[in-house]
Length: 439
Image (tube, rainbow, N blue to C red; front, top):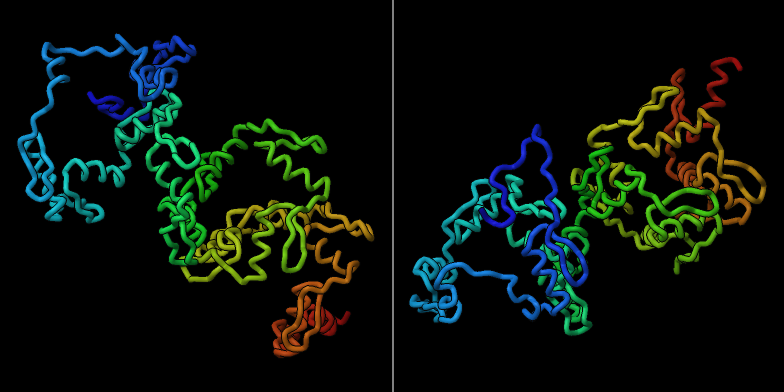
């Protein structure tokens, strides 16, 4: 049986496999491992990754001719006429020659992709079947290829064999080093066709493209919430586990990391270190500044794959997606009304509870939502950021501007159900209906 390969995957009814005992202990640092091969790899850290000093007697060889096999070079009688490369077996030569002829006789029945080797096709097919036969005995993680398992096991023993000659940074995988070296060369050859941005690696490009498509491949098994990136899911799952060791000294609220506490504490201190160079507006978080700056640039990087409509942020895109599906999973217990998002439901519930926890420091007036407080505060400072393109009149609120523009367009969207008369503003319709009601 191959190293790390399971003959049969465990059934759902069978008991979980026992964690193997870590019987192989390093004499230098005392760290234990489940297998001797892992211990041997780990010991290279103490003696140097390129040295075999201190490992005498650890490896054994069987067979009477093992010494001869190591000392005598292997014969390679089969030579490629194209590139002069030699092979020990004829089958190896025949497989190699397909590189020159371009022949790819093995086809995947799922996606139609062709391969030179049958073994490469079998490995590829695991993408479609989801088969991961190679298991790490340290942490239980599974892999579709043995090479991936070997690379992963280096993370447990702390081996980082690939070193950057520019800055000395070390990496576990050669691919990690190659991607890192591009940062020194300034090489970015992977282009996003949506926005034209360049990236150093294909994986980084794929992650970036989720911004445009809104794809969220990582789902939480607890609450079914979906995420764009694996690290977001891992961070979210800590909330379910209650793993929130860092606490705010002001209000006692707990967080995953000290960085989250620091950001949260800006609510108490009022600190807003990130300023917009266009309008001077300040923000407590860098991501909020980035989102705000798109109003100035007009950039809308989040695109709906259904209808092509674009949005400034991913929240707007995810909410828009539900207009296509008609999904409204969140229901109000008081009035039975349904909402697309939990945040929309929480905002609505404040109508029933009368909760108003956003207070104006100038006049003491309280509001249910932060956006209402922001709009109100413009009265005190005299700010009117919303300008009419027709007459240059300015307004403190966007909805007031929208109502004003109906003077120019002649739009009257509010219709009386009694007599059919239309009005530009809802307040005018309410006053009109009182005539019919006799109020």
